[in-house]
Length: 173
Length: 275
Image (tube, rainbow over all chains, first blue to last red; front, top):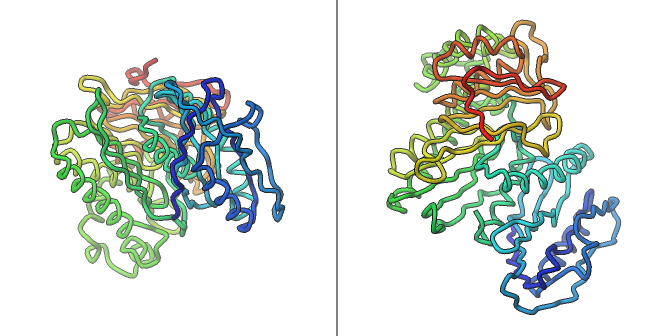
């Protein structure tokens, strides 16, 4: 299991989100390219506009269009900085999942899959179904001030595992 | 949550170091891949010796691994698998097998037969109880180490003690089975919260009365002091539906709710629901 470096991007407060890319059904070539792109994020990255966040780009299998982060760096250090961290790259039943978490101060402001692949069509369904839901679940869980969720299953667990690693890097509980 | 994944290509565990929080004190988090799911730990150390807490965590994981090795029905040579196909006699199995089957018998009785490991296709199958039982045992290790509070979440079934801060209970959200980005309700954990539901894996629970896959509600949640029983009762309640609530009402210390297809929540009288 590979662990991605911490991405600490100090961005202007208005840029509360970091460019996220959501890829599915990628082959391993694209995947490794993606990992490299993520690794490049050791330099501060930020979204030039809010348009990048929250979008889901579905890449067809075998496509070589790697949605790399367009890195127009604003590496100014702001007191109320927005930080991002990549979670653990989790191999789970249906594929591989790695989350990118953005936080402003002590609060999560965005959760995006940085790597999300699957070994078979069914898992793509599971992923596309579960992840947006789980993202809002995470945000809702924070707002509802709950300590755990009952009724989760293994997709959720892969998510939680990756998420937890990112939260630990960000020092958020 | 009766059904576990087969042959999962799990990666190594993600261990996280202890961290300090000004309000809650040091926290230890860990995720352990076992029993076809992810078991996550949230341990609040309090004044406990961090080394003792780490040791307890390792013991807790060993307990889970042991339970998996003994009870897995997916591992063809586990004692439980051997027992299922009469390759060994019950007195040849490890001691905890008899203990778990005793608990299964009790859970069957308390559930009015809606939970019945003896009436599963393919032979006796205690899976619906074992995961909760193993999480209880893992929690025992943490409790004995002197930590202030802990949650052991076995794939969405939680065994807990203490709370996030002294004097406040753990708050557990129950996923809405129809719109799982939502929390259907929040419960204060009395020690265990188990939910069986249709969720991501579809309907996978067998009705012991017919031998067929059948459920009479979208999700069933049971709270109580111990997870082995909450887990088993939730499995049975998913099959029984609303009609099963009265049975759980009668079990001392246990409460429950079921969520219907329309999203309505029906609960027993003293469910520790909160907002």
